Amino acid sequence: MSPAELLTLLVGTPSVSGEEGPLADLVQDLAATQGFEVHRQGHNLWFSFGKQGGPRLLLNSHLDTVPPCAGWEGDPFTPVWTGQRLQGLGANDAKGCVAAILLAAVELSKHPLDGEMVVAFSAEEETGGNGIATILDQLGPLDGAVVGEPTGLRICAAQRGLLILKCTARGQSGHVANAQMLGTENAIHKAARDISRVAAMDFPIHPLLGSQKAQVTQIQGGLRRNQVPDACEFFIDLRTGPEQDHEALAADFQRLLESEVAVHSKRYLPKGTDPAHPIVRAALQAAGKMGPVGSGTTSDWAFLGTIPAVKAGPGDTFRSHSPNEYLTLPELEAGAAFYADLVTSFFKLQATNPPGAK
Ligand SMILES: [Zn+2]
Image (cartoon, rainbow, N blue to C red; front, side, top):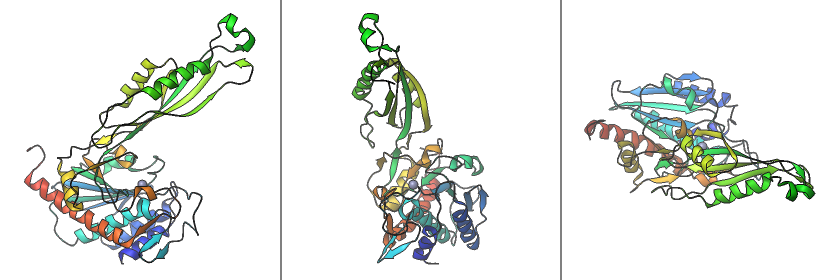
């Protein structure tokens, strides 16, 4: 099967998060046909090959897509080739990466490898449910990981996490006419003071990720136009850096704000890998890039614990979750070559510079 045919098949099999079954079936069959012994749990698939007892490298990408957004020309679920470009939902995010990893695995399996390549295609990346986190302990010990997402083959060695805080300012309800006399505390005024504090907060600048501000993204308070509100609720969205701890940050916010601060979501952890680590060096070598970059968007890397990892793959992050998403054939072919080179380079670097030797 040619790379173009493979991508067409993947894009032509709908796999909105939670409904990846048919695509998981297809990929499982394709991999089995190539001789891989494929394991499956839910809609997650994994297999490995190469030298047992050597270094183990995970290549992962996700099978699911977001639901189609408004603005598509034609049916998002029907792949359409225009010249070298395939348009369809998931072509860019991340079926191009899935196809490229599969192609690389097939190529690498033809020759002896200096380590074990572990391939995992996971479900529900876009919703963060029954995905990579549920199979990680079955993959065995890993010396490195590559998360396939459309980065234009730039090597992301740092990825922001996501902390969402739910804040509640409390006051007393009462008649507006009597508020001055009774000293009734207005919860919206209290929230406003806190929101000004949030907007003024500064966070550490990261060498790859740059600076970041906390954003208040939703607010709700007050029942009537003539009643002092007794409660006002607002949400804070902070994209965190690898050196930041979500619990400690939540405590910082609680110290600073008059409102009650509760953690609404903290599971998308920030990630960073030392640029000198073999996984970063191997990826840079394979991509022909001088240095790594940072990425503001989260991915399955958030769930990989302390495994040294990079995020990289064919395609462009700005095409993701957008109408008329596409991938080009040269991008796909460069992606497959990149993953294969990366695996070979990583095992070579691990052999000359084993863990703990530096
Ligand atoms: Zn993705």
